[in-house]
Structure formats: C-alpha cells, structure tokens
Image (cartoon, rainbow, N blue to C red; front, side):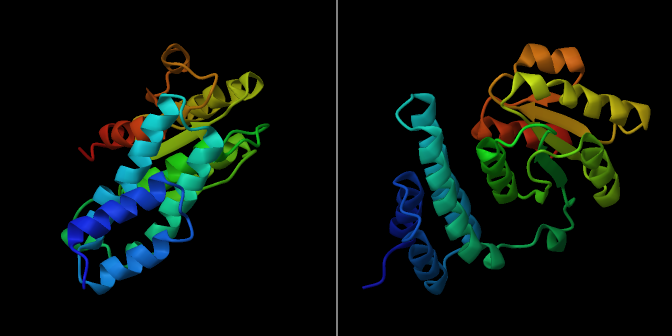
Length: 219
C-alpha cells in the first residue's frame, strides 16, 4: 500500500535527524515516484530534519560530527529531489548567488559545509571555494558570478583578520553596497561583525539561512 505524503515527509525528516544517510535516498525516490511535490519534501522533510538536528546540537545532545552525518543524509536526499524542484528562473524570480568558503589559513570546513547545504536548499546558487581560500579569491569570484552574498567562515582566532580584509577589499572596489558579507565560526561574535563592518553574523547554519535571505532581500 502506498504511503501518504505526510508519512514520507516524516520519514525524510527522520532519516536526516537519525543520521540514516544510506536510507534517505530510497525514501526520497519513493516520495517522487508517488508524484508528491519535491519542494515540500525538501523543506518539510529534509530541512525539518536538519532543523531538529540543529536544535539537538544547541542543546548539546548532538556533536558537530553528528551534524555532519545529518548533513550527509540531507545532501543524499537532496540529490534525488533537486532535479524535480521548480526552477526559480522559470518564475521570473531573482537568481540569488552566494560565494562561500573558509578564509586563508584555516582548514576547518564542517560548519561551512552545513551552511552551504542549507543555503542551497533555501534557493541560493552556491559557489563553494572550499577551505584555506586566498582572500582575493572571494572578491574575484563574487565579481565574476555577480554574487549578492559572500559567506566567510573560520574556527581560528588567528585567521579572523582575513574577514576584515575581504570587507575592506569590497569597500575599496566600490562593491560594499552590492555584495553583502555574512561571517560565522567558533570565535566570531556580533561585536566582531560590527567592528569589521560586515553585514551579518550567523551563530549557526540554521540562523544563517534566515539572515542570508534577509541580507539579499529574498524575504
């Protein structure tokens, strides 16, 4: 007997939340085969599961490594559902572009990967430069693809000044009004964000989505 849309959405959410990265693709395929809307599967299923995992992380019930497995599950489900999502371009909506990466000198990228996946799911076209990224690369890539947002991540205090350098480069090139800068990572704070004149600070991947949308005028 075919499962209802609500049952499968709950299963998608549970697969992500319970770190079942091997099973989620099968559930996603079943969901699509039943003719249900891919967008609901992503937002009410996969993203909901990631939100639940994020809450567990905030309550210190989940570790960063758990979140990474959850994000793997989410991405596996997304691979199946993504081809069936309605294209933003078809609706005449703005195609929001974001350049993301870990600043030069830092190789910690778990948090960055989570934010990338969450923003991708939220409708952003993502350009992931990876980790230990030369600072000029952020600005060059943003200019190249005409991005509205740059996301900078670091877990090290020694590489924090690199974030200010990127903001300064944008200012120098007259791009500060066109390209917003969102920063995040362990040692980062709202106070530091204000100090370097970045446009926003996200404490985690969940809050990064709502902040990113706000910064580019998506909401």
